[in-house]
Length: 374
Image 1 (cartoon, helix red, strand yellow):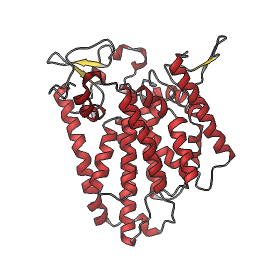
Image 2: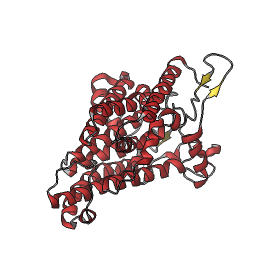
Image 3: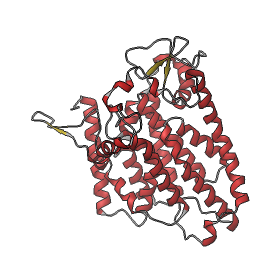
Image 4: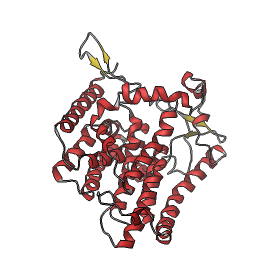
């Protein structure tokens, strides 16, 4: 609504909003990246500030399931396995909770996932590379850690350049035998593909830098460190990013369990701190089986690793959430790796892992609905 009225900040700081920074013009700046708000501009223009944000969040979340299914189809995943993986993403992961809740933190994950899946699908269709760059920019300006997925698209450009030399039409992500020449893409073709991608990606990046400069006086200042009182909290004693935060983040990612009570429902999830990804989506473990020697696998794993660098070194494990919400930044690539791992078929263990994810996330949905938080 502020954007629609030509303002870069809010006129006030209502009690239901937090993480606002007072600016020199007497307004309050929202520190989150702007892409989700920009996406909502047409809806707010029509429905006003009374728009229930969870509604577009659920609609985009549902579209993400369809997008993932299309991406898996392009990878050659058979229909039954494609349906299984799409359902696991929809109802066997924390993507379900984030889409339904739709608050600023979670809506950002939903939009970032949408942008990534659009970019991956465009890459599989060998669309103009500028369109891939714009979709990736949407993802990166929704959740900043997603920007670390650059290696995946660099790998795609290298693969596309190599395929153009051979006249191959095999979509990116479909397993195939790699020749020695495939690892040496023609430089001129690679540059011809990369320039529109970089040019398109630079547009949202430049706008975000200008947005930061207009609000905080520096293009490289996103505003988080300016939130009043934030750095006085104990968890930020070593700053926003520190290697000392890695053990706590790894515990939240892999080891956080539920709380047990003598009263019904006896087992309750933690609202603050989340729940281990091994409990919410155990099927993601199958991604570690993928070690193919091709551009797709190299780019996917390099991007997943880089995405988790700011996540694991960050001081805050995620705040109010169901499950470990930060893992969603890597969900699109992890689910594609799981699809690669299951290309020979989903065995009994994989099916049991999928069912476990359904059960645990249904329990999370009930906890959200009935307030069963620990």
